[in-house]
Image (cartoon, rainbow, N blue to C red; front, side):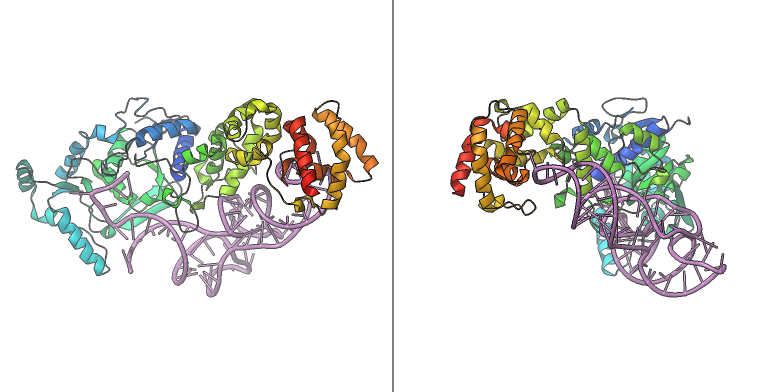
Length: 485
RNA sequence: GCCUCCAUGGUCAAGAGGUCAAGACGCUGCCCUCUCAAGGCAGAAUCAUGGGUUCAAUUCCCAUUGGAGGUGCCA
């Protein structure tokens, strides 16, 4: 075995890539890249019942979009393939039988129905059910082989010692140990000939020369059992790194069923992948010696250290993700911003009928998530209805009465403005305001309200007037003045 | 029930025996300002509880409580 670091992300194709999975993939990727090692994608599809059509392609797509490029995997090849477990199905029985021959496993002919019944009864009595090793004791290897040859259905179970302790060392959690008598004789090879996760992960991780096994903490309590398997084979166990889950709140995991967004959902809503990656990296992990929080993928590769991981579950905070997203949106080049914003803006207005570049310029610093854009600019295409109390501004002491005066004052100026540009609008009106005896804000607030109908707009009165154009601005102004009476 | 793991503000977190217990999001206020946003400044807000150990515990140990995971021919 070489000493190059090899890590693997091994999802099951059961649906979309959720954020917890994305984070596990990210850390696994960072671990490999940080050490100049290899990052591998393996598809764990041994449960045929749960497989969702198209899910494998979705995994490739999400990994690609997240920028988690893998060195080996089903769609990119590699020297340790195949990388899809069902394509490796012929491999597992051989190893399972090796364990049977060495006494570390045995054939079991008990029916699922029988065992389910036993389990139910045990559960009713409030005790933990464990398989009683009936077939280990009552069926000899010779008899087992004969029954199998006769076509009887069987599974192969791990023969866990009844005494002693089993444990393993985790990079994050340290040494974890359990009494063997609390461990069940898990099925290694199912009746359909496919391995269970319990077995496939051990065999594949070994065969693929994986050095660091990263996975969720749901495997923390069964990891000692996997180590028993490594021992039985005489294989060197990998380094383990179990990762706590990402939560929706303190008691619930993030889950599609509660409407929580997947990675794909966030992208579709207008979150940038850089923001998602950056944010998710910081969910349950913090770099040493820095208070900085904006990190590129390369920064993360350089900074990542499993010792900075937190052992408890982390709650996903949409607010903070949005804050990160706004930051990354502000950093976009104007061209890129316009490109990304265009489809959202086109939902409510005609880009050809407005100074689109200027609109984008005004919008970029105010966009938190692209999906908010339609609501932010709808007023440009269509004048919203509004109440006159919108003219009230406490700070500048603006009232509907003040507004009436202000509008009457700016109307002629606007009508005769020589040139409909922001500069000209600004300079002309600003120069005139002192004559009115009103404060700047007492003139400009009402004007902006009158032509936009909104308390908050992505720019001031001059920008809005410019974007709206002369005709629309004057039309709206007159309408609003009429409404004010 | 049993087994494993976890526990610093509302959230993400730094701190690893002696700290005024960092920082960020969010929140509040102020400044800037033709609105909003951005930016600047200020503020409120945390060591789950109880026992130990120690001259000294947020930090080490134990218990309790709370939470998570496991207890499948699911992963």
